[in-house]
Length: 137
Ligand SMILES: N[C@@H](CCC(=O)N[C@@H](CS)C(=O)NCC(=O)O)C(=O)O
Image (cartoon, rainbow, N blue to C red; front, side, top):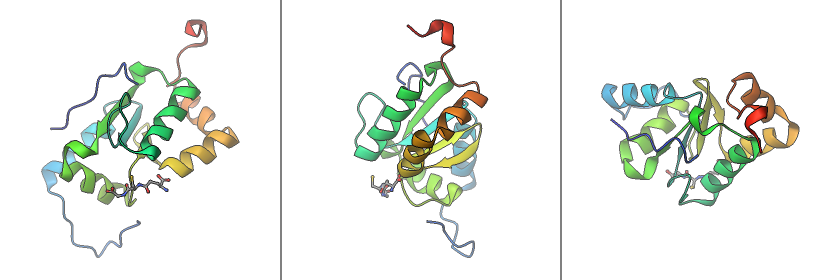
């Protein structure tokens, strides 16, 4: 349902809230989350981020050495249902949103804090989502 970007490029809502997204959208988002070990819902594309937070998050993933083959990005600006649906599914009010191995990790601030503490590197390493050492120039 949603276009997966080329892999080379690399609020809490109370449960009583009325569900706004359709089952179809929910399924499409779930399937997007499963489409790669590292999945980023962002504004714009990795090549042309359209928000500073999305840009920073993509940059951090690149700095960590995420393997483009293990990475998928989805542009929420292309689809309002995706934009709102991913917030509902993650119970997180903003974009970007990072998933690793189908688990919600967080937004830009959390990713930044995890990058600084070394947790992000460990998470990505454990997920085997980094470019293999021998291929790093
Ligand atoms: N503190 C947030 C910053 C992200 C943020 O504030 N995103 C805003 C502006 S790009 C957002 O997604 N607002 C809701 C929307 O645009 O749908 C984080 O850590 O990710």
